[in-house]
Image 1 (cartoon, rainbow, N blue to C red):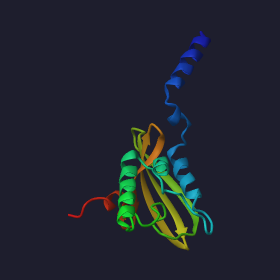
Image 2 (cartoon, rainbow, N blue to C red):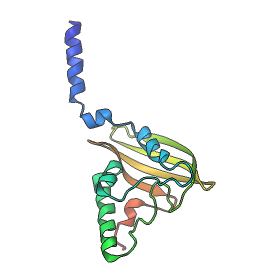
Image 3 (cartoon, rainbow, N blue to C red):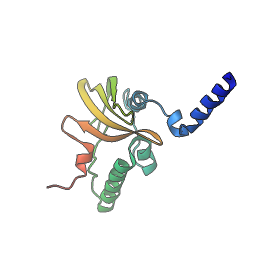
Image 4 (cartoon, rainbow, N blue to C red):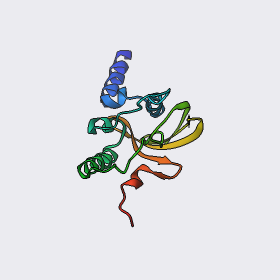
Length: 156
């Protein structure tokens, strides 16, 4: 009998998509982002390609960022996202990062709050997260004044 239970349990684990089974939890996903910003003269994350965007953002948000960047390049202008979304600045020297995460009851969404000091000033950035087949991805970023998705909405 125990071997049947083990076989059934093993079969259940095989049903979990591989990407989700291997992806970090929401808090680790966000902490790994902010680790790339610690220290002096660090480059942060390279978000210059579609492939890079898809590592961090949901497909719909990656589309908005990518389309805007390509259009801005074609027009020889700055894109609407003219800074780093994770630190809400163009320049940074990040210290003391702290990340908290509240997961939604359905387990498919979460809100992460990242608090850190940038050049000594306390900054808070909120991230709306979604669990996708590729793992946790950011669906929006909220700063003290505005949010990422709102940058791409036409003026009314």
